[in-house]
Image 1 (spheres, rainbow, N blue to C red):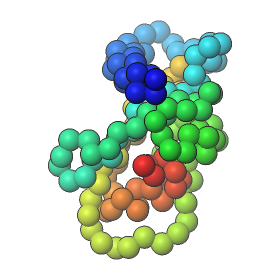
Image 2: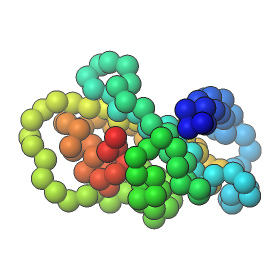
Image 3: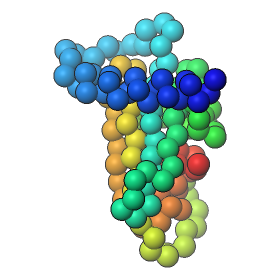
Length: 135
């Protein structure tokens, strides 16, 4: 059931994201029955294809992400903008092992995108609040 829902979400986002960018002004509120947010999260090690991919749905909180409630709470506080989530303080090694993270989705009817390269996976996790890329 979860796999089927995740496949549906990925297919829906692949179709909806380009359309959302091309449509008239986006809705300011959530339509009853639709999730507040829907995201596809990717972690890419080196220059490979996505190494790990997860889905995240908010309100109701779920998807394939391991901590959807905490992660959706962080996104709510940041209005769905990954770059606005406060960093999670804590140590990371200085070992250079680059990782690229990518988020594509919709938050309250608005397209949201975030892609960034970090020095290692710990930096990616800490810099984005500690839970978003902890999978």
